[in-house]
Amino acid sequence: MHLDRIKKLNTKAIKKGSIIYWMSRDQRVRDNWALLYAQEKANENNQNILVCFCLIKNFLGATLRQYDFMLEGLQQLERDLINKNIAFHLLWGDPAEEIPTFLKKNKAGLLVTDFDPLRIKRKWKAAMANKINIAFHEVDAHNIVPAWEASDKKEYAAFTIRKKITNKLDKFLVEFPQVKKQKLKSKKVKNRWEDILTKLEIDHVIKPVDWIKPGEKAAKKALKLFVDKKLNNYSRDRNDPARDGQSNLSPYLHFGQISAQRVALEVKKSKAGKNNKDAFLEELIIRRELADNFCYYEKNYDKFAGFPEWARKSLIKHQKDKRQYLYTKKQLENAKSHDEIWNAAQIEMVKTGKMHGYMRMYWAKKILEWTKDPMTALKIAIYLNDKYELDGRDPNGYAGIAWSIGGVHDRPWGERKIYGYVRYMSADGLKRKFNIKEYIKKINH
Ligand code: FAD
Ligand code: FO1
Image (tube, rainbow, N blue to C red; front, side, top):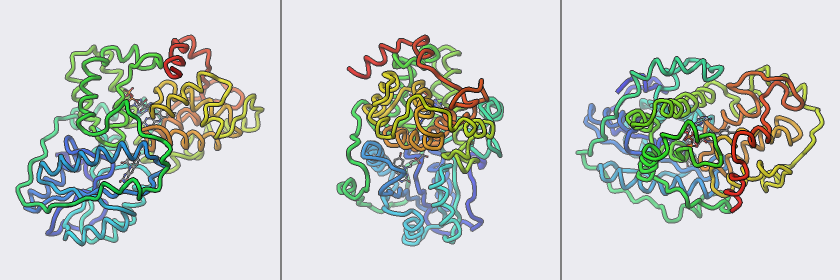
C-alpha cells in the first residue's frame, strides 16, 4: 500500500515483537488501511498482530445513543477479527496510560493507529509518542487522499481543495487488498462487554434509535440500498427535507464502520447518472475531506477564533444588534422557538439522531440569530449537535457549524444585522424550495 498513507509519530525503530493496531476512528475489519498496514508489517517481520480499542468513559459528551451504536459495532468487529484469527482487546481508561501499558504487556515491536484530526486524539498520541520506545505509525484510513497529501495547509473553501484532491484520486482511489487470516496462533481474549454501560459516565436519557442498525454488515447493506434505490435521484432529492434522498451513511462513516473509499468505489461502479454520482462524490470526498483539512490545520476548529477574519470582524461589529428573538439553550433544546420549521428540525434530531443535511444549515444559522452573541451560538450548536446526532463529535460537524455560523469555507454575503457578512437563510427561502409542510408533518406524526 502507499507509504504516503503513513505518518511516523516518533523516530523510534520497529523492534522485534508483536504488531499492535490501536483502533479508534476506523472501527472495521474490511477496507481499513491501518489494519492492512499492521498486517503487512506483521508478515514482513513474521510477528503476530493484535488489535486493541481503548474505551473512554465520557467521550466529548457522547450519550447512551452514540455509545450503544458504537459498542454494538465493536462487538461485531470482535467476532469478525476472531474469524481472521486476530485477537481484539477492549481496554478501558485514558489511552495515554492504557496503551503504553498494553504495549509492554504484549512485548510490542510497532504501534499502528488510525488518523484523526480531533484535538483529544492528538493529545493522546502526543502524550505517548515519546514515552514509548518503539515505532509509532499513524495511517489515514478515513480519507481517500490522506489529509497531509491533499494539502499542507488550511484550505479556504471547497474550490481551493477540489483540484488538489481530484488530481490524486487516480493514485489513492483504488481497490483494497483483503485482510488475511492470521496463521500464527493468537491468544484467546475475554472482553468484558456485559457491565460496560454501567461503567460509562454518560447521559442515559438520550435513548438509542431503532431506525438504523449499527455495524459493518448493516453499513454494507445501507450502501447497497442507497446505490440501488436512491443514488439515481440524489442530485434532485438530497437537499429536500421532505424526501428521504440522502444515503444515511454518516453514522457508519463517523464510527468508521464503513470506508468512504469503499462507498466511492461502489458509487463509481454503479449505473446511476453521472450528475448524481458527481453530486454525491462532491459531498462524500470533497466536503468531507475539506472538513478533515479544517480540523487538522485549524486548532480552533470549534471556537470563534477559527472563523475567517472577515466573518469574525463583521460578527463582532453586529454583536450588539437587537435580537428580535432570544432563546436559552434549554428553550432551543426543547424546540420551543417561535419558528415551527426550526422546531421540526430540532425534534427530528432529538427523535431520530439524524437531522436532514439541508436543515442543519438553517438550524445552526437561526441559533446565531436567536442567541445573545456568536460565541454563545457556537457553543450551543456544538452542544446540541454532539448530544443528539448519531454522527456528532465529527470533523464534519465542527466544519458544518463553523460554515453556518462563522462563514468557514464560505464567502462574504450582503451585510445584515446580527449576521454581518455571514450568509443568511430564511424560512421563506425554505418554503419556496421545498414542501416544508410535508417535512413538518413527517416529523410530528
Ligand atoms: P449524504 O448527503 O448521503 O452524504 C454522504 C456523505 O457525504 C455524508 O455521510 C458525509 O460524510 C459527506 N457529507 C455530506 N454533506 C456534507 C457536508 N456538508 N460536510 C461534510 N461532509 C458532508 N456531518 C457529520 O458527519 N456529523 C455532524 O455532526 C454534522 N453536523 C453538521 C452540522 C451542520 C450545522 C451542518 C451544516 C452540517 C453537518 N454535517 C455533519 C454535514 C452533513 O450535514 C452530514 O454529513 C449529512 O447530512 C449526513 O447525512 P448522509 O450521510 O445521509 O448524507
Ligand atoms: N474513540 C475511542 O478511541 N474510544 C472511545 O471510547 C470513543 C468513544 C466515542 C463515543 C462517541 C463518538 O461519537 C465517538 C467516540 N470515539 C471513541 C471516537 C470516534 O471513534 C471518532 O474517532 C471521532 O469521534 C471522530 O473523529
